[in-house]
Length: 317
Image 1 (cartoon, rainbow, N blue to C red):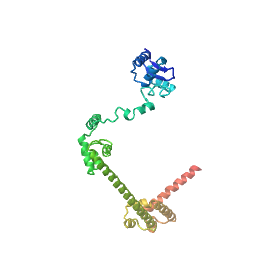
Image 2 (cartoon, helix red, strand yellow):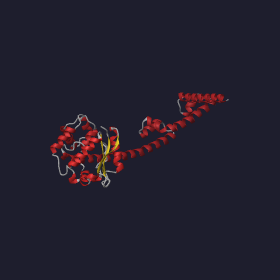
Image 3 (spheres, helix red, strand yellow):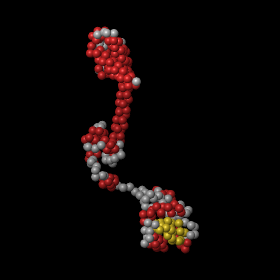
Image 4 (cartoon, rainbow, N blue to C red):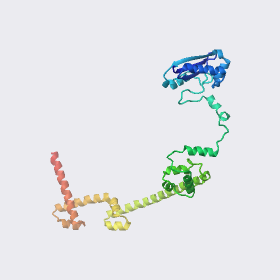
Protein backbone atom coordinates (compact mmCIF):
# COMPACT_ATOMS: atom_id res chain seq x y z
CA UNK A 1 0.00 0.00 0.00
CA UNK A 2 1.55 3.28 -1.18
CA UNK A 3 0.17 6.79 -0.65
CA UNK A 4 0.42 9.44 -3.30
CA UNK A 5 -1.17 11.54 -6.04
CA UNK A 6 -2.83 10.09 -9.14
CA UNK A 7 -4.08 11.50 -12.43
CA UNK A 8 -6.97 10.43 -14.66
CA UNK A 9 -6.26 11.89 -18.08
CA UNK A 10 -8.39 12.17 -21.20
CA UNK A 11 -5.78 11.81 -23.94
CA UNK A 12 -8.32 12.92 -26.55
CA UNK A 13 -8.64 16.54 -25.32
CA UNK A 14 -5.96 16.69 -22.60
CA UNK A 15 -8.33 17.28 -19.68
CA UNK A 16 -7.30 15.75 -16.34
CA UNK A 17 -8.61 14.81 -12.92
CA UNK A 18 -6.20 14.94 -9.96
CA UNK A 19 -6.74 13.02 -6.72
CA UNK A 20 -4.97 11.71 -3.62
CA UNK A 21 -5.12 8.48 -1.64
CA UNK A 22 -3.31 6.57 1.08
CA UNK A 23 -3.53 3.59 -1.30
CA UNK A 24 -3.21 4.88 -4.86
CA UNK A 25 -3.67 1.57 -6.70
CA UNK A 26 -6.81 0.70 -4.78
CA UNK A 27 -8.25 4.18 -5.32
CA UNK A 28 -7.67 3.99 -9.09
CA UNK A 29 -9.42 0.61 -9.21
CA UNK A 30 -12.40 2.16 -7.41
CA UNK A 31 -12.53 5.00 -9.96
CA UNK A 32 -12.50 2.51 -12.85
CA UNK A 33 -15.28 0.42 -11.28
CA UNK A 34 -17.54 3.44 -10.63
CA UNK A 35 -16.94 4.84 -14.12
CA UNK A 36 -17.71 1.51 -15.75
CA UNK A 37 -20.92 1.26 -13.72
CA UNK A 38 -21.81 4.84 -14.72
CA UNK A 39 -22.31 5.97 -11.11
CA UNK A 40 -19.21 8.12 -10.51
CA UNK A 41 -20.07 11.16 -8.34
CA UNK A 42 -18.03 13.48 -10.59
CA UNK A 43 -20.47 13.97 -13.47
CA UNK A 44 -17.88 15.79 -15.61
CA UNK A 45 -15.50 12.84 -15.43
CA UNK A 46 -18.33 10.34 -15.91
CA UNK A 47 -19.58 12.10 -19.06
CA UNK A 48 -16.05 12.22 -20.48
CA UNK A 49 -15.60 8.49 -19.76
CA UNK A 50 -18.89 7.70 -21.48
CA UNK A 51 -17.73 9.51 -24.65
CA UNK A 52 -13.99 8.75 -24.69
CA UNK A 53 -13.63 5.51 -22.74
CA UNK A 54 -10.71 4.28 -24.84
CA UNK A 55 -8.85 7.59 -24.31
CA UNK A 56 -9.08 7.64 -20.48
CA UNK A 57 -5.72 6.89 -18.86
CA UNK A 58 -5.11 6.15 -15.13
CA UNK A 59 -1.63 6.92 -13.71
CA UNK A 60 0.26 7.60 -10.48
CA UNK A 61 2.19 10.86 -10.80
CA UNK A 62 3.80 11.06 -7.34
CA UNK A 63 4.30 8.94 -4.23
CA UNK A 64 4.55 10.85 -0.94
CA UNK A 65 3.95 10.59 2.80
CA UNK A 66 0.38 10.74 4.07
CA UNK A 67 1.11 14.05 5.86
CA UNK A 68 2.03 15.67 2.54
CA UNK A 69 -0.98 14.47 0.53
CA UNK A 70 -3.07 17.64 0.89
CA UNK A 71 -0.31 20.04 -0.15
CA UNK A 72 0.86 17.85 -3.05
CA UNK A 73 -2.69 17.39 -4.35
CA UNK A 74 -3.23 21.16 -4.29
CA UNK A 75 0.12 21.64 -6.04
CA UNK A 76 -0.74 19.30 -8.93
CA UNK A 77 -4.28 20.73 -9.29
CA UNK A 78 -2.78 24.21 -9.60
CA UNK A 79 -0.13 22.96 -12.01
CA UNK A 80 -2.67 21.40 -14.39
CA UNK A 81 -5.30 24.09 -13.61
CA UNK A 82 -7.77 21.22 -13.45
CA UNK A 83 -10.54 23.24 -11.76
CA UNK A 84 -10.73 25.19 -15.01
CA UNK A 85 -13.50 23.43 -16.92
CA UNK A 86 -11.57 23.86 -20.18
CA UNK A 87 -8.60 21.97 -18.73
CA UNK A 88 -9.87 19.51 -16.16
CA UNK A 89 -12.59 17.78 -14.16
CA UNK A 90 -11.77 18.80 -10.57
CA UNK A 91 -14.51 20.68 -8.73
CA UNK A 92 -12.38 21.74 -5.76
CA UNK A 93 -8.89 23.09 -5.17
CA UNK A 94 -7.85 19.90 -3.37
CA UNK A 95 -6.73 19.00 0.13
CA UNK A 96 -8.94 18.54 3.16
CA UNK A 97 -8.20 22.10 4.42
CA UNK A 98 -8.81 25.41 2.69
CA UNK A 99 -10.75 23.88 -0.19
CA UNK A 100 -12.20 26.25 -2.77
CA UNK A 101 -15.07 25.45 -5.12
CA UNK A 102 -14.67 26.28 -8.78
CA UNK A 103 -16.98 29.01 -10.11
CA UNK A 104 -19.12 26.52 -12.01
CA UNK A 105 -19.72 24.46 -8.85
CA UNK A 106 -20.59 27.62 -6.93
CA UNK A 107 -23.14 28.61 -9.55
CA UNK A 108 -24.61 25.10 -9.56
CA UNK A 109 -25.32 25.40 -5.84
CA UNK A 110 -27.11 28.73 -6.05
CA UNK A 111 -30.88 29.07 -6.03
CA UNK A 112 -32.70 25.85 -6.83
CA UNK A 113 -29.36 24.03 -7.03
CA UNK A 114 -29.03 24.42 -3.26
CA UNK A 115 -30.55 21.36 -1.52
CA UNK A 116 -32.07 23.69 1.13
CA UNK A 117 -33.64 26.04 -1.45
CA UNK A 118 -37.23 26.93 -0.49
CA UNK A 119 -37.09 24.93 2.74
CA UNK A 120 -37.57 26.44 6.20
CA UNK A 121 -37.08 24.97 9.65
CA UNK A 122 -39.93 25.31 12.12
CA UNK A 123 -39.69 27.94 14.87
CA UNK A 124 -39.81 25.19 17.49
CA UNK A 125 -36.85 23.38 15.91
CA UNK A 126 -34.81 26.60 15.65
CA UNK A 127 -35.44 27.38 19.32
CA UNK A 128 -34.53 23.80 20.25
CA UNK A 129 -31.22 24.13 18.37
CA UNK A 130 -30.49 27.48 20.01
CA UNK A 131 -31.14 26.15 23.48
CA UNK A 132 -28.98 23.06 22.91
CA UNK A 133 -26.15 25.16 21.45
CA UNK A 134 -25.98 27.38 24.51
CA UNK A 135 -22.72 27.19 26.43
CA UNK A 136 -22.79 25.39 29.75
CA UNK A 137 -21.39 28.57 31.33
CA UNK A 138 -24.46 30.66 30.40
CA UNK A 139 -25.91 32.22 33.55
CA UNK A 140 -29.18 33.45 32.08
CA UNK A 141 -32.32 31.45 31.49
CA UNK A 142 -35.11 32.27 29.05
CA UNK A 143 -37.14 33.61 31.97
CA UNK A 144 -34.23 35.86 33.00
CA UNK A 145 -33.95 37.28 29.49
CA UNK A 146 -37.70 37.91 29.35
CA UNK A 147 -37.51 39.85 32.63
CA UNK A 148 -34.48 41.81 31.40
CA UNK A 149 -36.25 42.79 28.18
CA UNK A 150 -39.36 43.92 30.04
CA UNK A 151 -37.18 45.96 32.40
CA UNK A 152 -35.36 47.55 29.46
CA UNK A 153 -38.65 48.69 27.95
CA UNK A 154 -39.40 50.42 31.27
CA UNK A 155 -36.13 52.34 31.13
CA UNK A 156 -34.13 50.39 33.73
CA UNK A 157 -30.40 51.03 33.23
CA UNK A 158 -28.29 48.23 31.77
CA UNK A 159 -25.71 48.56 34.56
CA UNK A 160 -28.40 47.90 37.18
CA UNK A 161 -29.64 44.81 35.33
CA UNK A 162 -26.10 43.49 34.92
CA UNK A 163 -25.56 43.82 38.67
CA UNK A 164 -28.92 42.24 39.49
CA UNK A 165 -28.36 39.16 37.30
CA UNK A 166 -24.61 38.93 38.00
CA UNK A 167 -23.53 39.30 34.37
CA UNK A 168 -21.44 41.85 32.48
CA UNK A 169 -22.89 45.02 31.00
CA UNK A 170 -21.79 43.67 27.61
CA UNK A 171 -24.13 40.68 28.05
CA UNK A 172 -27.10 42.94 28.80
CA UNK A 173 -26.14 45.26 25.94
CA UNK A 174 -26.15 42.37 23.45
CA UNK A 175 -29.64 41.41 24.65
CA UNK A 176 -30.78 45.03 24.32
CA UNK A 177 -29.35 45.36 20.80
CA UNK A 178 -30.86 41.97 19.78
CA UNK A 179 -27.44 40.51 18.98
CA UNK A 180 -28.19 37.70 21.43
CA UNK A 181 -31.53 36.22 22.53
CA UNK A 182 -33.38 38.14 19.79
CA UNK A 183 -35.89 35.30 19.54
CA UNK A 184 -37.07 35.82 23.13
CA UNK A 185 -40.02 38.26 23.16
CA UNK A 186 -39.09 39.57 19.68
CA UNK A 187 -42.01 42.02 19.78
CA UNK A 188 -40.11 44.05 22.41
CA UNK A 189 -36.90 44.45 20.36
CA UNK A 190 -38.13 47.58 18.53
CA UNK A 191 -39.23 49.29 21.78
CA UNK A 192 -35.92 48.47 23.47
CA UNK A 193 -33.99 49.84 20.50
CA UNK A 194 -36.05 53.03 20.64
CA UNK A 195 -35.33 53.42 24.37
CA UNK A 196 -31.60 52.89 23.82
CA UNK A 197 -31.50 55.52 21.08
CA UNK A 198 -33.37 57.91 23.38
CA UNK A 199 -30.90 57.27 26.21
CA UNK A 200 -27.95 57.86 23.90
CA UNK A 201 -29.44 61.12 22.66
CA UNK A 202 -30.10 62.23 26.24
CA UNK A 203 -26.56 61.31 27.26
CA UNK A 204 -25.09 63.31 24.37
CA UNK A 205 -27.17 66.31 25.40
CA UNK A 206 -25.98 65.97 29.02
CA UNK A 207 -22.35 65.78 27.88
CA UNK A 208 -22.81 68.86 25.68
CA UNK A 209 -24.43 70.72 28.60
CA UNK A 210 -21.63 69.75 31.00
CA UNK A 211 -19.06 70.84 28.43
CA UNK A 212 -20.76 74.24 28.07
CA UNK A 213 -20.86 74.67 31.86
CA UNK A 214 -17.21 73.66 32.11
CA UNK A 215 -16.18 76.19 29.47
CA UNK A 216 -18.19 78.89 31.23
CA UNK A 217 -16.70 77.99 34.61
CA UNK A 218 -13.25 77.84 33.06
CA UNK A 219 -13.64 81.40 31.78
CA UNK A 220 -14.81 82.54 35.22
CA UNK A 221 -11.91 80.71 36.86
CA UNK A 222 -9.42 82.46 34.59
CA UNK A 223 -10.92 85.83 35.54
CA UNK A 224 -10.69 84.97 39.26
CA UNK A 225 -7.05 83.92 38.89
CA UNK A 226 -6.28 87.15 37.07
CA UNK A 227 -7.94 89.27 39.81
CA UNK A 228 -6.30 87.31 42.65
CA UNK A 229 -2.86 87.80 41.15
CA UNK A 230 -3.58 91.49 40.60
CA UNK A 231 -4.66 91.97 44.25
CA UNK A 232 -1.64 90.00 45.43
CA UNK A 233 0.70 92.36 43.58
CA UNK A 234 -1.15 95.31 45.14
CA UNK A 235 -0.26 93.94 48.58
CA UNK A 236 -3.79 93.06 49.70
CA UNK A 237 -3.66 90.53 52.59
CA UNK A 238 -4.26 86.85 51.88
CA UNK A 239 -7.38 86.51 54.05
CA UNK A 240 -9.07 89.47 52.38
CA UNK A 241 -8.38 88.07 48.89
CA UNK A 242 -9.69 84.62 49.88
CA UNK A 243 -12.87 86.11 51.34
CA UNK A 244 -13.38 88.47 48.40
CA UNK A 245 -13.27 85.72 45.73
CA UNK A 246 -14.49 82.79 47.85
CA UNK A 247 -11.43 80.62 47.27
CA UNK A 248 -9.60 78.22 49.56
CA UNK A 249 -6.09 78.63 50.93
CA UNK A 250 -4.90 75.87 48.58
CA UNK A 251 -6.30 77.70 45.53
CA UNK A 252 -4.76 80.98 46.71
CA UNK A 253 -1.32 79.36 46.99
CA UNK A 254 -1.70 77.66 43.60
CA UNK A 255 -2.68 80.93 41.90
CA UNK A 256 0.08 83.05 43.46
CA UNK A 257 3.04 80.68 43.98
CA UNK A 258 5.19 82.13 41.19
CA UNK A 259 4.43 85.71 42.27
CA UNK A 260 5.13 84.81 45.89
CA UNK A 261 8.52 83.32 44.96
CA UNK A 262 9.50 86.48 43.08
CA UNK A 263 8.28 88.64 45.98
CA UNK A 264 10.14 86.42 48.42
CA UNK A 265 13.40 86.92 46.51
CA UNK A 266 12.97 90.68 46.85
CA UNK A 267 12.23 90.40 50.59
CA UNK A 268 15.25 88.15 51.14
CA UNK A 269 17.44 90.68 49.34
CA UNK A 270 16.03 93.56 51.44
CA UNK A 271 16.51 91.59 54.66
CA UNK A 272 20.13 90.94 53.71
CA UNK A 273 20.82 94.57 52.88
CA UNK A 274 19.22 95.91 56.07
CA UNK A 275 20.91 93.27 58.21
CA UNK A 276 24.25 94.11 56.61
CA UNK A 277 23.67 97.75 57.53
CA UNK A 278 23.39 96.69 61.19
CA UNK A 279 19.62 96.85 61.48
CA UNK A 280 18.01 94.61 64.13
CA UNK A 281 15.72 91.71 63.14
CA UNK A 282 12.73 93.18 65.00
CA UNK A 283 13.16 96.51 63.21
CA UNK A 284 13.40 94.80 59.80
CA UNK A 285 10.27 92.79 60.57
CA UNK A 286 8.36 95.91 61.60
CA UNK A 287 9.44 97.87 58.52
CA UNK A 288 8.67 95.10 56.01
CA UNK A 289 5.52 93.89 57.77
CA UNK A 290 6.97 90.44 58.44
CA UNK A 291 7.22 88.25 61.50
CA UNK A 292 10.60 88.24 63.22
CA UNK A 293 10.88 84.47 62.70
CA UNK A 294 10.37 84.98 58.96
CA UNK A 295 13.13 87.60 58.82
CA UNK A 296 15.45 85.26 60.73
CA UNK A 297 14.69 82.40 58.31
CA UNK A 298 15.32 84.64 55.31
CA UNK A 299 18.68 85.69 56.74
CA UNK A 300 19.61 82.06 57.36
CA UNK A 301 18.71 81.16 53.78
CA UNK A 302 21.01 83.88 52.49
CA UNK A 303 23.73 82.76 54.87
CA UNK A 304 23.48 79.17 53.68
CA UNK A 305 23.47 80.23 50.01
CA UNK A 306 26.51 82.46 50.64
CA UNK A 307 28.40 79.61 52.30
CA UNK A 308 27.55 77.25 49.43
CA UNK A 309 28.79 79.80 46.89
CA UNK A 310 32.01 80.25 48.86
CA UNK A 311 32.60 76.50 49.03
CA UNK A 312 32.02 76.22 45.27
CA UNK A 313 34.56 78.99 44.65
CA UNK A 314 37.16 77.24 46.84
CA UNK A 315 36.57 73.92 45.08
CA UNK A 316 36.88 75.54 41.67
CA UNK A 317 40.13 77.24 42.69
